[in-house]
Image (cartoon, rainbow, N blue to C red; front, side, top):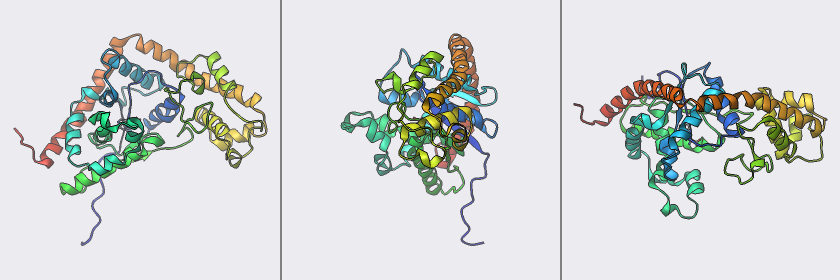
Length: 344
Ligand code: TRP
């Protein structure tokens, strides 16, 4: 056979995703990431990481870093990630992440990284004063994924460019070392509704923990009364809920609320509009608040219980790190062979 297409990656399907160890997780983190992580467990072997190596790219935080990691671990588990089935671990506990990053640093091109919009946004006007780590952030992310030969990566819209970079790195590594099927080219999993959760006050801005106003977001730990008051005060317009999806065009805040309702009740947008179309927000908003509270309150309670017992949480994380190492170790050993590093 001549001119055969390079053999497609034949290995197992595997999901990898990561979240920064931040406190102040909000609805965007839940619907955009956690809820999806939970669902994927039925379909794939999943590895969920808490990326503390990424966290130090923007500054030191030695007193709080571990607790932040624990809080995110608690959120994963409280949301429904089953740490017996899926692997939940802290990135820095598996040293191979940094080792593979170095190899990938020598594969990735400066020009590729210079195009990363997240770096430009985070570095702002003074790129020369940001850490080299911040510039290298997407290479570490590629190493996270490919260290497990993950094939699918649930991420938000904002991480699409980083995923493309991971594919480029995988492809170039495979080409440079003449191993066409060594690394899979990981696919993003970005499905709506809930792909992009916006501020409750401004439908053009992402819901974010760094917004100075707490009224723009629903925190995972907000109680029912707080949720109700935030939703009631959320920006809308004088028109009723539209009857069909076309009616959401140009109404970013309404589209966001309907999207949240659909995501949190695991229904389609069309289905939500079929029920609420033509009704006013005086009806829609309390129903939305109730659905949110019903979803988030038990999760917040479980998060409190889990963070209240750091010993038990650490045991889960230790088990996760061991299982992660059991996959990463042999793959890193293979990479070392492919690259030609000395083997004792
Ligand atoms: N950069 C991702 C974010 O901010 C977090 C992350 C780090 C990640 N490593 C990853 C996501 C690997 C997916 C896969 O959301």
